[in-house]
Length: 288
Image (cartoon, rainbow, N blue to C red):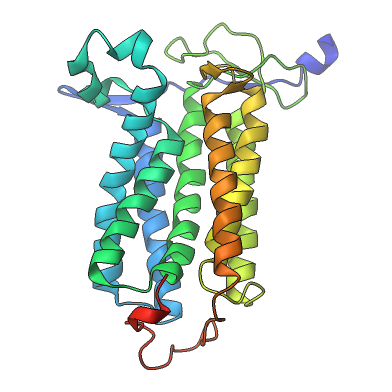
């Protein structure tokens, strides 16, 4: 046990980078911003690859999806901790600068925001979900780097050689025993899922629009459900934690959409080639 603990990964980075007046710059904030930027750019490149919309329209969807993700992230966090933090102080709901967001809320909010805007603008919805979900999970993976540095998510104690211990006094995990790098597991899971999604999409292994999105829901839901067993910073609902309950809902949605999209006609373009006329604005009957 002691020999293994000697191999523990020590993280002594200050979560706070600098203060500019009343603005506090943190690693969490930096990598969240970088993740959003890279994820959006990746989605735009993927859309350009198959001639889906144009750059202006793709960026507009992102401008809708990003604030929707922030609202969703805060909303789900508030729902999880309503009784203990917010029921007696409603104004604290809006104190986002003090922390408190849910990555699952960001996923749900971002997808809903982009979905509603795409439906209003009459875009090919299923194709957009495939492209947007790849950018989303890439942004999530990059954002987790800030979580790893900060040590703000507590996990169960571990004696594995890759257990992490935080030694900076500003870290929320300061003085805690070595723990599983649960958010690092999630980051690696995100990257593996992204790689699978891109191969499935680019090589037409899943030939119908929307099927890559369904794969994202299923794969991320299962991965997050399992990783959540190691997390100790989530509230419980019966035998499960909040993230696990949401994961079960996401898995169910993935199964439903997979069954629905499997009944649709295969897409009529090859990834990497220009889409045929009408692909950017599909007929009403072809949308789903």
